Length: 140
Image (tube, rainbow, N blue to C red; front, side, top):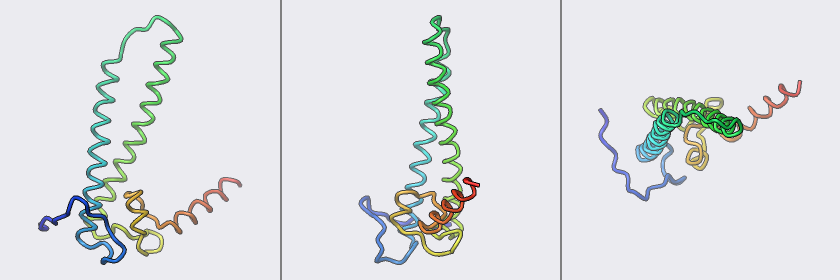
């Protein structure tokens, strides 16, 4: 069992410290856990809203509008469900010592990119290459 790392409230990972040191790993772990908790809380509230919102609406236009709203909300929740899976994967990478390194190149991912997208698995350069390849194959 690892000892808990003290992390000041105002801590931000910096380029001038060792990459993926204990404080950086703890910072990203907490960030990911907080994001996951928010998503799960929103999910619970959506389920409650959908269960409470079941009612018979006589006006066809109002009913269609409500069904469209529900479909959109369910699509958003599905995307968030997938994001929770990515968060769990990132937390596993932290535990396994692989977090913060590009899956394609093995090079460190910039701290700014990780802070903006803590679930990312690719460096900016590798992501751009991936998107270019995807675009070329999509155009075929």
